[in-house]
Image (cartoon, rainbow, N blue to C red):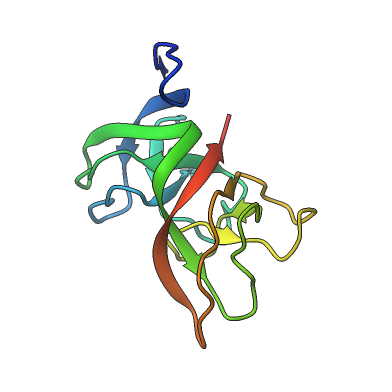
Length: 143
């Protein structure tokens, strides 16, 4: 784990080293989960699916090619996080974030009591007639 040196001018963040086993490049700002299959080792990460929605690992710091290692932010404020939003969920500032099946983004939850709670939005995400992805400020807490 990498802990950023404490300063008064920027938010505290924690990052971990992970290995991309998703089969494609993970883009910066994508939300990923730990691999929960037979090869689980606490380092392998991939895109969320129904088997591992609770295994949120963090947000990709910079692009990670398939099979390569990279950094993941697992705690702290982040100026840009991939957000998946649907027309049925309000993306208001303070909304709890959780993983979503087959998506690289975190989804604002319908209520603060929804399971997940892997962070929260720090700004409102515009509503839409259908599902879409965007980038927004968020606070991540995967520790």
